[in-house]
Length: 205
Image 1 (cartoon, rainbow, N blue to C red):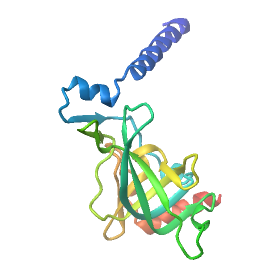
Image 2 (image 1 turned 90 degrees about the horizontal axis):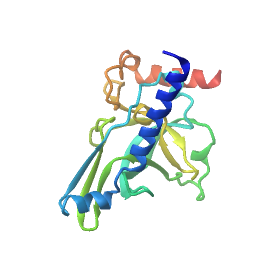
Image 3 (image 1 turned 90 degrees about the vertical axis):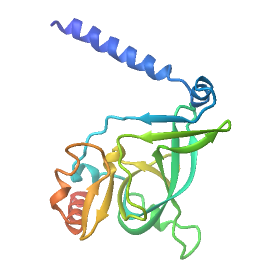
Image 4 (image 1 turned 60 degrees about the horizontal axis):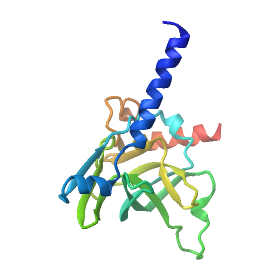
């Protein structure tokens, strides 16, 4: 196949994908199309596992718990996100020193994480968006989070999508919350302490 033909096919595919994204109906439109009945919207994003050395490039690496605060629609009204507060137990890496910049002496910085998915009542109708790339963590679980900073200093998203979220299990083992057959290929045989050592060593190089 000629390079020109390959380029045409690639361009056509990109156009189709772009149009498909642009034409995605809004959540209010889908409610109307569904006659006002509850709406369930599964979302699947193709997220690949990242190595620990890749994840070590995150702006913030923290061990802690996530406490849900609120759910909201994005600006396009096509997706629902849930905002969580991070209850940090240990800061492993902090590129910009955010966790030490509290406005109140002795008080921890309030860190927020946005995750795709959640439940919201829109125009009187219950809407649930489920991120199919991620499995749910256990209630009250300790989570190892690799985070990337947004335009707001204390607001973050997962670095590498769902690849940046792990649950710490006893005795010190961790499991990826990413739904992928290769998700635990690297971390499955490592303890939490070994993982922390890899992260800190990689960042110091």
